[in-house]
Image (cartoon, rainbow, N blue to C red; front, side, top):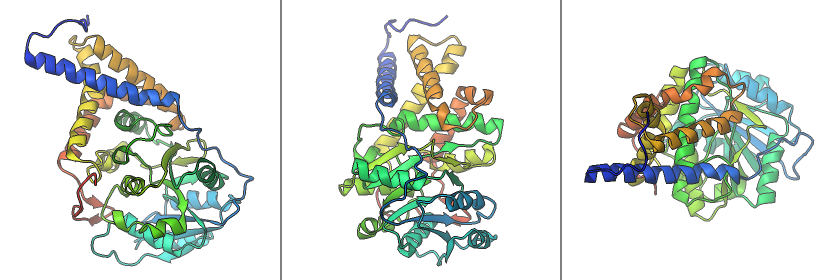
Length: 379
């Protein structure tokens, strides 16, 4: 039987515990409630050709096995003026696959001191592009015809300078179907859903570098990727940096317009996404601690407390929010199965992974090891 929420604590520590849980419940409720008032999702516009040419830039390092689906889809999109693939010194046949599918391949130059790999690849691709607009896509995305035109249209119609967008996720195993949504929920609880109409302060912006759209000359005039050159979470770093410079930035829902297969297994997701989820490169220490409290108190602990008979009405509220969030994010996945709905069972290990990655940030990615940024997180 659960304990009553109105039961008065008998110690200062008990009051502090209750106060922290109430504060977390209020924060999560406000953020999740933003789903009720969101910007319209990005819908493909397959018959629309933008008035100005659009270049698609795809940074790629050892992506021979995955880039074909992305480039095949882009060949069917009438809104694409050119496709530029930056072959970031791949050790496989990435360049040959890209060339065979009609892309212009830019051989990536050696990594300069102080740069991380993806920002450097993006910088080279943006400089090589010739379109007025640039859409950047990760090599593991599968855009639908009309994505590119829809992104440009949203920038123009909504007066946005930078759009990033969330894709529909393909999970290849049952374990991944359970793990990935638990990881995604940590982002929703910390930042709110994609497409929220409310504009947060720059230091709380979220972005998704899998899909980005901006005017080429405007970004180059702002320094391109150089201001975030040493960030492994360069997408969030760039969005926050530009917002501080007065850019209008939005993170939209594009699950109807683009799919992504980020990882082939739960183990890959655990290592790869778990590494970047804390956003330590771009988040100040106080916000990191606050975010950890939200994930542990609001997501990870309520279900175990209820199962152990130590829960109360506040834990029931947290569980109801968790299940509601799970229902809301189901459209972000292709064919969510039973494992998807079991994802709350993995909330404790996911919270532990978040804490571990925040305490010991990992600076190795794609076979390269990087020094920590010289700049202050959350700048």
